[in-house]
Each structure stands twice: as structure tokens, then as C-alpha cells.
Length: 435
Ligand SMILES: Cc1cc2nc3c(=O)[nH]c(=O)nc-3n(C[C@H](O)[C@H](O)[C@H](O)COP(=O)(O)OP(=O)(O)OC[C@H]3O[C@@H](n4cnc5c(N)ncnc54)[C@H](O)[C@@H]3O)c2cc1C
Image 1 (cartoon, rainbow, N blue to C red):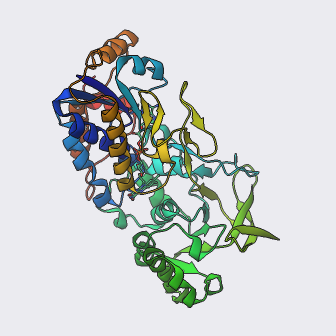
Image 2 (cartoon, protein in one colour; image 1 turned 180 degrees about the vertical axis):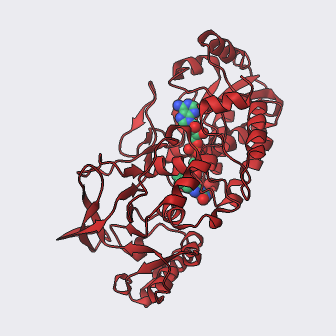
Image 3 (cartoon, rainbow, N blue to C red; image 1 turned 120 degrees about the vertical axis):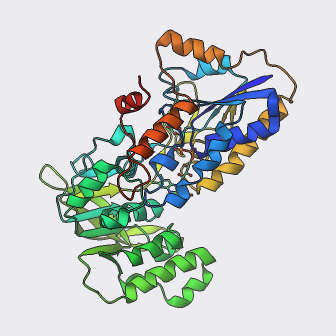
């Protein structure tokens, strides 16, 4: 018998557990441990609340959690309640799937001003992550700047632009919906250092901006390369650029909100009296290698809210080697050390879609299986060792059944047109569980 700990219950954690169950069958147990009382990582706390069909992937993970060999052990932070060393003693292998929950810093003057937030915080706020429930981003100004040219920037722009009715069917948290209803932001500028051919935005997400009830996207025609140059792009990127061309060709139809794409603009500093008022950017151009270089010309983009969507980092864990440059655990093909592996964003850095995490999990499960053929025994005791440690430390772990109870409470409290009213604070979770 073998016993495995998968730390993190996002996509990477669940795909790994699924692969371990397939590889070992009844000859192994898998504990999926998460610091939050509820599972699914960024599926619950990152993917946009108005993209319910994407969030539905969690149904597949439910099936994994229901396997007899698998346990969900929530409310247990590794590196906090239990150390990596302790986990390694308790399990035959530990697989870290803790994602990359920390915002990368902009590293510019004014970053500490009120109204400057990272996307992990902002997205966590509207998705009900307990760490960001009290973020209270200032939406009382008339302009926002969003830094970054990926899909997260598009999510943020769309959420800031939608009307109350356009959130029907989403699971946006009540506090964010109320605040967005009161928002006076009318101009949203998406700032990118490079140009339309260098964006990391996918066509579906870009296309959505063209169908908003009260907001219209705007692109400067002169920022677009000659149309023949699109031929060199792969089909997805070509489609994305064709959306930008549509936005550039649109007449203003008088919608009150505007989403302006400001390409070739590098953030230099954020200015304001006690709070963000403007983002100063430097005009850039591309060099021969396609990198942006400053031209020396600067100008100010009005911004009472600045959301940086420039990527994420995995936090360090004591005893786990770290790749400083990549902002992730140092690993070779997912292996960190004997008996210690990583998958998902903690392995590769914050890139790719949900599905990209699947091969990661399967590859690591294969490596583990090669080290410990099914039928061998590592002399560890089923999750009881962890349970004893948690009991000793007074840590109240949550189970998958607890999650079902929480899920039912959330569904019961749903607002009209919303599938659920998310519970976002620890004491509310405990209350839902009758504790
Ligand atoms: C804003 C945003 C929107 C996105 N939208 C989409 C989309 O629409 N479609 C798509 O395909 N992809 C989307 N993605 C990408 C997708 O979410 C990721 O590919 C995926 O979630 C990464 O999986 P992961 O398991 O590595 O990390 P995560 O999903 O982040 O899971 C990590 C888990 O580890 C837990 N954890 C962290 N630290 C600890 C600790 N110390 N101890 C115990 N547990 C811990 C966390 O609570 C979390 O549950 C989006 C990403 C973001 C940021």
C-alpha cells in the first residue's frame, strides 16, 4: 500500500489525484490537502464568475473526490499547520499543486498608493476568496487602467464594464456585485508594452468585449500592423487580431463606457495625492527581436483604479528549492527531490489553460509509479498520521462531505439569477457546517 499527499485542490491537484488513482487503483490512498475549507483553487476563485461553463469542469473533479481512495482535507495550510518535512515523513510521496497565488509586483513608483491592486487580489475579491473579501477597491473615480495584455486583463475589463443584468447566471459574490452597481468608472484603459501581434488574449474572450450592453471597445487603427502581416500569425492569434481590427473599425455608438486598448505603452509610475489618480506610461516601439524599447515620450493615463495583470508567483515553502527567475519551485520535469514533486502553476509558472495542467499531473503520477510499483509498501500509515497531527494542533479540517454541505448552503442562499451565493469568510463556513 502507498499513501500520497497532493497539496492544493486546483486543477493540477485534481488531475494528479486522478492519475494516481488510475496508476495505483486500490493499492494507494490520496489525500488532497488545501489551505482553504473548500476545493477547486482558481476554478472557484480565479475563473470569471460569468464563465460558468468553464467552472463546470469542477464536476469532473467531484468524481475524483468521490473515489474511495481519495480524501479532501481542507482548512490545512502546508507550511503553516503542517510542514513539508512532516508531510514527507507521513506519506510515500508529496506532490505540490499550490499554484501561483501571489501577484508579481510592477516595481514602479506609486505602487503602494490606494487604488493600485494586483489581479490576484481584485479577481479574488469578486470571486469570494477569503483573503480578499475586504479589499474594497475604489470604484468611485471615473477611470481605471488595467496593465497587461492577457486574458486576465480582459476578465477584469469585462467585470468592470458589465451591467447588473449582465451578471445574471454568474456566481459573482454579492459584495462585489453591489460595489460594481455603484461604480462610476466609465473609461477603462488596457495598457500593454507591445502591440496587437504580441497579445496573449484568446479570441473568445476578446470577442466578448464587442457584445457588452453598455461598453464599447476601442483600438487605434494606427496601432495595427498592415493586414497582410496577420498571415504570419497562428490561427488563434489571427482571430484575436481580427477582433482588434473590428474594434478599430467601429463607429462610436454612444455607449457610456469605453474600453480603450493602449498598445506600445510601458508603465513608468503611478501618481496621485494619497490615492491613484493617473498612470504615467512611456511610449514604446518594437526592436528587431520584437521586444519593446522606450522612446522617451511619456504621457498620463487617467486611473483612479490601477489593476496590474502581469502574472503570478508561487510562494516559497520552507525546505523546498525555489526558482527565483521563474517564480515557481525548482524542478526537473516535475521532480523536486526524492519523494517530492510539483505540478501545475507551481511547476511551470502561471501559463496555460485548465487543461494544460492535466498532462502535468499524469506525467508526475507516472514518475511516482515508476519509483514505487503498485503492490509495494512504503510502511506509512493511511492518512491517520495526518489526522493525529491535526488533532494535536487543534486544526479542524474539512472533508468532501463538508464541502457538499457548504455547496448546498450556497445554493440555498443564491440570489435571483445566480446559481449560488458564495460563502467567503471562515466563520461563515463554520456556521454553514454547524460548528
Ligand atoms: C484570473 C484567472 C482567470 C482564469 N481563467 C481561466 C479560464 O477562463 N479558462 C482556463 O482554461 N484557465 C483559466 N485560468 C487558468 C487556470 O485557472 C489555471 O491554469 C489553473 O487554475 C492552475 O491550476 P493549479 O492547480 O496549478 O493552481 P490553482 O488553481 O491556483 O490551485 C492551487 C490550490 O492550492 C491551494 N494552496 C495554495 N497554497 C497552499 C498551501 N500552502 N497549503 C495548502 N494548499 C495551498 C490553493 O488554495 C488552491 O486551492 C485563469 C487563471 C486566472 C488567474
